[in-house]
Length: 117
Image (tube, rainbow, N blue to C red; front, side, top):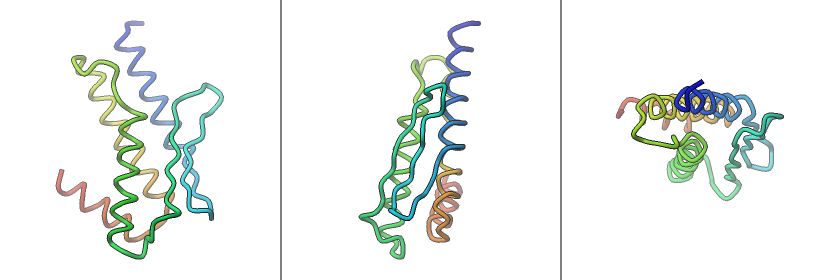
């Protein structure tokens, strides 16, 4: 297996871990728990945010995007397959995190960002 193929596999596994393990608790923290294969994970805390406001919703969306970017970052941006896999990983992780929070405002913010490109 080449290093690019191996990295692609790692990125897809990280996306799956972040996607599958994002849990939103009543405490106001979103978790991406590491599965047995120790894929990267990030905890996104939002208990300090009011999701009933546009400002709070945008702040949480920014935190989710930032966490996905950290978890899914390619090792080498010169390798196109890694960059493409990282972009796919980020998109999947963001989509799942938005769904897990179950906030209509957050879903609308995500849809607006997708339309902007």
